[in-house]
Length: 269
Image 1 (tube, rainbow, N blue to C red):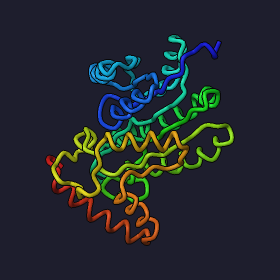
Image 2 (image 1 turned 45 degrees about the vertical axis):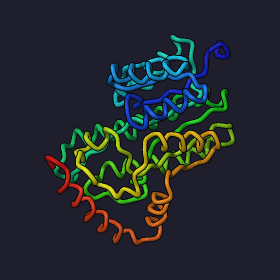
Image 3 (image 1 turned 120 degrees about the horizontal axis):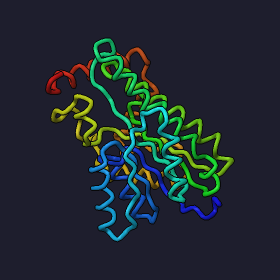
Image 4 (image 1 turned 135 degrees about the vertical axis):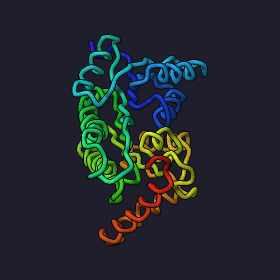
């Protein structure tokens, strides 16, 4: 019986960075968790740290959400454990620095699989239980979603999709009592930069940078309040607003120049 299943928050990409910070925030607010990522040892480290605070130890699922059957496997794992999703947090994602024509095509398509396809599938896979529990979906986009991204074209485009999809889904699911929030952080010091090929120092103005912990706290509050969009930090809100008023062609040239500077600073790029 579905009413006998325990409600959980399912968090993807939970092994480090914003995902791990979100796991701690959800746990601190009394949610039981299912943490999903590829790196089991890192996931167990997050789960152990949460358990050390006196909260219930999260369930750990070692799984690549980029796989075509990932949503089905997560659903099966919940059913076997008599759990059901109350919140779904789609945090898994990655970026790659470089021109689209120079980067490996297969790697860019894999980025779309994780950032777009998997996020879409997981957003839609648990709506019945989210409605039953009056829960919600938190999709991690980026301030990049407001901007053109020459130099990281596929990544920026993927985050524009997440932003558009999530704000539309917010309106569609609101009558069913399901909250949908798009989180659009600016730069956050995490492993993301190293994987993207941006592992240099001072690649972003410090007034834009926010900690993973502060971003996670603001995201949780926004989701619980039913806000369609959370952009942490006044400076990042200003960037999003600026993007909406500057002609697109000019904005693209500005972004191209900035991304060239970042590429020249990043080791090995």
